[in-house]
Structures are given as structure tokens and as C-alpha cells.
Amino acid sequence: MLHADKSELESNFDFFRRNLSRFLRTHKGSYVLIRHANDIAFYDNVGEAYRAGLDQFPDEQFSVQRVSDEPIELGHMSFALD
Image (tube, rainbow, N blue to C red; front, side):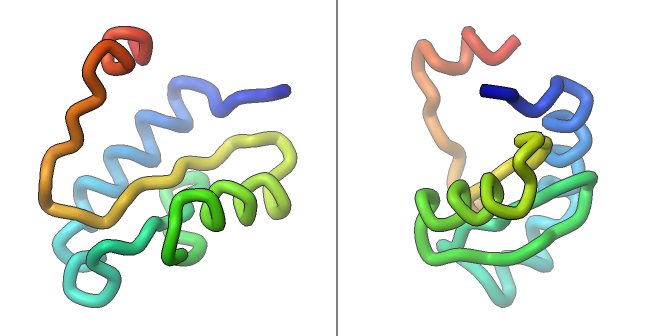
């Protein structure tokens, strides 16, 4: 199984943060599929977004983010991301 490299993840997350206010206006609560700092599509649930990412991008170079203005607590998982 391949995984998105760190630079792809950082670029996608930066894109997401810069565009969050735009996403919130029309897609609050949805999940956005992002690849190469571009929003590809929005989905109702994370599983649907992730499966669409795998179907479209078998190299797994994509990100999925929940469109929300509330911070997400990752707990111990956040330490593993570095």
C-alpha cells in the first residue's frame, strides 16, 4: 500500500486552510478530496471521499479533509503524524 508523501500532505493541508472559508460557505460538514492542492470533489462522508480518492488516484497522493471550522482532536494520533 502506498501513502501520500509528506510534501503532498502539507501542500494539500495548506490549500485546505487557505480555502476553508470558501468551502464553509457551500460545503460545511462535507468531506473534500484534495490532490496537488486542488479540490477535486465533496462527499457526504469520509469513507465515500476516501474510496473515491483510491479509485481516482491509485498512487494514493491525495488528502481528505472535513469541511468544518471546529478543531479536531487527534489525541495520540497527532504525535504519529510528524
